[in-house]
Image 1 (cartoon, rainbow, N blue to C red):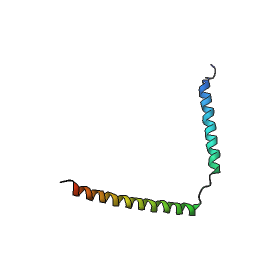
Image 2: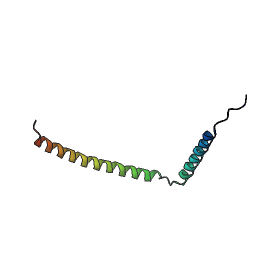
Image 3: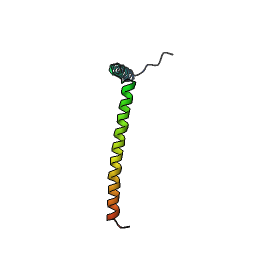
Image 4: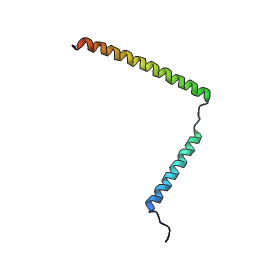
Length: 74
């Protein structure tokens, strides 16, 4: 018995997938990753931004809830 041959489409798909991941790896080598200090600063900025947006959403939600309780009976 001989080796089982893959269909031509499957071989092309494997080649395309392999080329794709080689390209991804090549692009990842070009990325300038942040150092530890930069990462800590960026993380802090994100936490502060999330806190501010959360506070603003809480204020708007509380205001709308107050208005709706005054408008709707019950």
